[in-house]
Structures are given as structure tokens and as C-alpha cells.
Length: 265
Image 1 (spheres, rainbow, N blue to C red):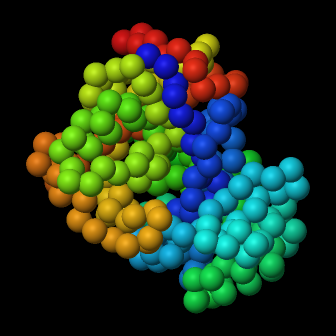
Image 2: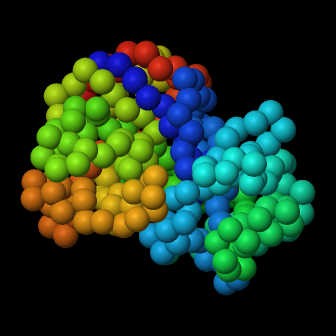
């Protein structure tokens, strides 16, 4: 079993970036969901209610984050890794509140123009504590602006199994994983508890419940019924539809595509 894809999503609910190597940190991969867009009430926004976010991509440049329109990469804003305005703001992510910093007036203006409402971009400083659900994350782990947990792992075989049931296959990026694993049986990840990827140890803590964001086509920003409709027929547990596993990390270091995954338990 091998690590075949690594993904980060620097700005929550904007496009992901496929990497060949990445550094693990307690909150997630370096740069993963450390930035977030908030409305004028300091509440996070996502593709669930703002479909056009699906059409905005992000690149990691030497001088900062480049946030740009996929259809017109010349329409972009460059966001320094260190915030310029750096005004403290308490933001809401689901039922949590967390301390963040504003980033730049330029980023705010660009996002406001693209999405048609007054918005701000914020970043999570290292001093912020936002805890993963202690019912599952047993070591008091912090998490970035991700929905609930630092990492998400999905096997390629699970997606292949789903696509065999769909009239039109979908891409893995609909599910926004951090790690894609090749060489397993479908849904093998459901049985894992402790794994290593390369030399780094991870704990598999909870199945990932999927939402309507997976039904948004990332190329067109159009919402449909799949894959949730099909997944509900064989991946439902109570009122939740499960696909992928939430994971926490025990060791910090570098991972690279091609690293071996070993199941310890």
C-alpha cells in the first residue's frame, strides 16, 4: 500500500493543491486550511452556500498564496504568508469560535468583488487553540479551519468502487482528502486504527460523514445529487453518509508520494 496523492487546501473551501511532498503538523499538513473567508458577522463561508468558491484556485508561491480564478489566472490576488493588517478577530467555524488575524485589504477587496458580498480573509496564528472533538481525538489535538479533524485519508479503491456504481465517474477532489492510498481493497481504511505512512505514525479516529459539498462539480460549480444519492444506498450509518477516515498525527516530519503505508492495528 502506498501514498499516491497528497493534497492541501490552504483556504477553506477554495481549490486544493496536489503536492509531491508535504510536512505534517499537529493541525494538519503545513498550510492546510490555515486561511478562511468570513462574512461581515465573522462567520465562515463555504461552497455549500457560495457555489462560485468552487471556481477559485490557490497556489503556493514563494512570496505568498496566490488566489486566482481558474478560468482566468491573470485575475488574482497575492496574499503574503505573514498577514499585513493582522487585526485580531474572533471567528465562527460551525459551533466553534477561534482567534484569527485579518490578512490584507487587497485580499478582502478581491474576494468581495469575486463573490459579490462583503468578505474578509483571515489566517489562524500558531497561538490559536481550536480542539478536535475529544470523543475521537484522544490527545487534545488542535485543528486548523478544517471542519473537524486535522487529516482525511481515502483509498483509491474506495473511489473506484463508487465510480463503478455511478453513471458518470467523479474525481477524488470532490472529497477533499489529504492522503490518497493505492493498493488496498475498497474501504479497507474503515478497519484501520493505527498506521504509519513512511516513518510517521497516525491514528485513524473516526469515519468522515459527507455533506452536500461533494455534490458540487468543481469544474462548473453546479450542484447535483451525486455522489451522495448513490453513497446513501450502501454507505449510510444512521443519518450519516460515510466516505473516508479522519486521522490525527503522532509524528511530525516529511511525507512524499510513494511512501509505504503500513497498518499497525
